Image (cartoon, rainbow, N blue to C red; front, side, top):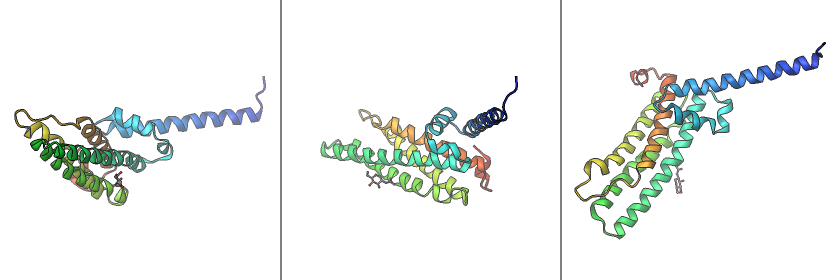
Length: 187
Ligand SMILES: *[C@@H]1O[C@H](CO)[C@@H](O)[C@H](O)[C@H]1NC(C)=O
């Protein structure tokens, strides 16, 4: 049986396209393997159509772009919880929430500047992302470690974890690009 040239070309294109898909899949998997949360990293990137043509810096950008609105919506949530606790005169609770609010304002502002230098100043990005993670961790610890007897548990553990995970993933990806500083040699 003779296969027409056209069929052969079509077949070749299909193979190449498939191969390209496999290579892309590997870039996401390989990149995510270098982060603390490979599973969340892969699912975050695969669910975003922008990942298709992205290089490693682009993948970090996508994760930052996912983390920022999540951090900002947590900031808005903390604001609401704080206003409620203040109105209800829940003294230590609104104090913790007020501290959390400050932390989240800082975290959102650090994250806001993260992608600006991505690719040109990875060290600046790493510093900002590292700060953002520590603000979120401090917010969560306000409740766990400073909670007095009869106090309240953190009402935003799930949100804090989600933000911490996304920013840590983005941080891991940027560090894998290198930044000519010792901080990028450790993960
Ligand atoms: C955060 O959310 C507020 C309220 O929805 C919005 O006005 C603001 O632009 C957002 N900021 C960022 C950095 O996304």
